[in-house]
Length: 94
Image (cartoon, rainbow, N blue to C red):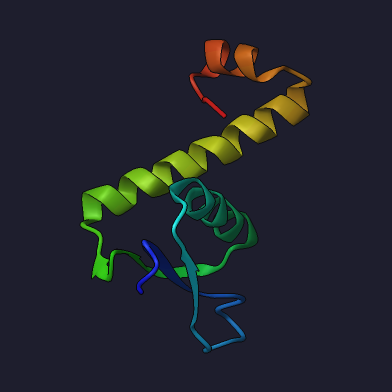
């Protein structure tokens, strides 16, 4: 049985050519994994859903949510704000 989400990526793309795939059935886990990939600088090759590559606008939406989570975390930590205040002041939800 296919996992609902499959994300192909390369860690340290400047030094590594091996492509890995992360499989999960949980959309929240997929989003959290994208956050980890973005923060580590990994190269994201594709995001698939039920074995089919997601459309560009859908993958952009997933990546935007992940980037918003990163921005909210950084603002919260750097300015010593709670997430409600970060949402109110900057519009980033965690």
